[in-house]
Image (cartoon, rainbow, N blue to C red; front, side, top):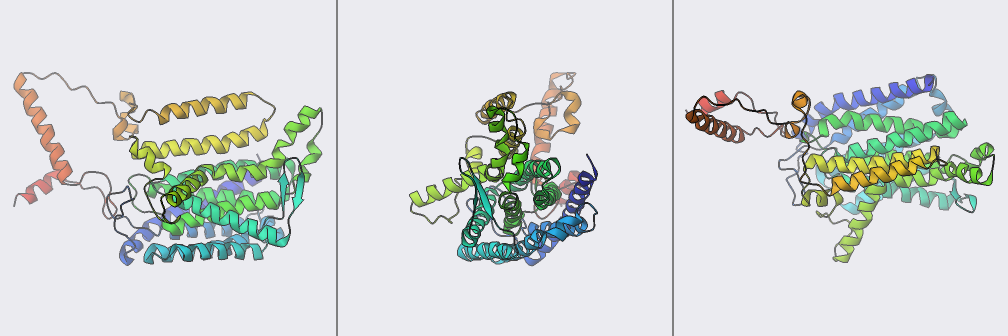
Amino acid sequence: MGQPVRDYLLTLCVTAAVTYLLTGPVRKFAIAVGAMPAIRARDVHREPTPRLGGIAMFGGLCAGLIVADHLFNLQSVFQLSDEPRALLSGAALIWLIGVLDDKFEIDALIKLGGQMIAAAVMVIQGLTILWLPIPGVGTVALTQWQGTLLTVALVVITINAVNFVDGLDGLAAGMVCIASAAFFLYAYRLWMGYGIEAAAPATLFAAILMGMCLGFLPHNMHPARIFMGDSGSMLIGLVLAAGAISITGQVDPDNLQIFFEGSERGATHAMFPVFIPLVLPLTIIAIPAADLVLAIVRRTWNGQSPFAADRGHLHHRLLEIGHSHSRAVLIMYFWSALIAFGTVGYSVHAASSWIVFVIVAASAAGLVLLLMPRFTPRAPHWANRFVPPRYRRPEEAPAPAYEGETAAATSGDQQDARDARAAGMNGATAVSGRQRFLSRQKVDSGR
């Protein structure tokens, strides 16, 4: 696929590696400075967990930009555009506000003002929406004030949508990673397939964002040992918004019309990629945005502030109907992937009916999974060592030699289970790892 793919892959790997390696020291630093808030009524975790994971993610962002600046095929992004510098400036500001909020819990209105200032900083440096493709009208040029207001609104909405969905272990990082992967495929196709150089910055932003999320996920999957906090959720939300702004407002849709040819029906299908820059950013944040809108309506209907926290988010409702923590996260992953990749796939094969059939079939499968919270799949016996304990098929116990052996084995197993629970054998906790050497603890406790 050419040199650019290898350069993007190298940038992604460096970003992920730096984020992964920094997360461990950042976790210790968060514990040392006391960035471990008490359990709130709306939280689903049971133990205080350190925040400030955004520090590691910001380090990965900086490393990715530095590496990309020294790669031959990506140097033109920094030479021909100020968008990477604009992204870094806005990201540094929003990251600093998030770090202060993770430690000191600053007011929601102050955070909102900081988000608007960060968006304005990016606008000043050229990362703004210049025009919009309107179906039935064509390309509409925006004035400076219109472009600024629209850019600030998109940044604020995306940041808060990602922040709202960050309620379960690994949920926000995984959903943004899936969305950025779909965004990367579309932006790379515009750049390499259509030869549109203006799509290169958005492609780079998507690759770096994937690396940030992939590097942080191993530390954030259930049970999470560290949270990204507002310093991380607002950061990845801003990077996602920056890519959407770059490819929506900087890429001229008229450049795609040179590929329109054939019948009127073929021209209609060929016009679909023109409007994807307008539609795709909305599909990327479809689930977080829907959660955001529902939360605002729910809170204002109940006479509360739109910024008041509650337990009415989509992931909370999945837990209430009986889904486990991991299953709720996987369901949210599934719908994010279906919406994002379905839109990208339809933009590539708009004339094919099979893509619509696949999307409908996948939606039906998703609804079935959504309505079966009590169903727990079991892996075959040979795969027990490769899957989490909750999905392992129980081994068949050998037949006892006499009846008394069964009672002894049962009582022994129950006693071991009670000892394990007393010793805290419920996975890695936020402060310490898994408890080991049960026999030694049993001897010490008897002294």
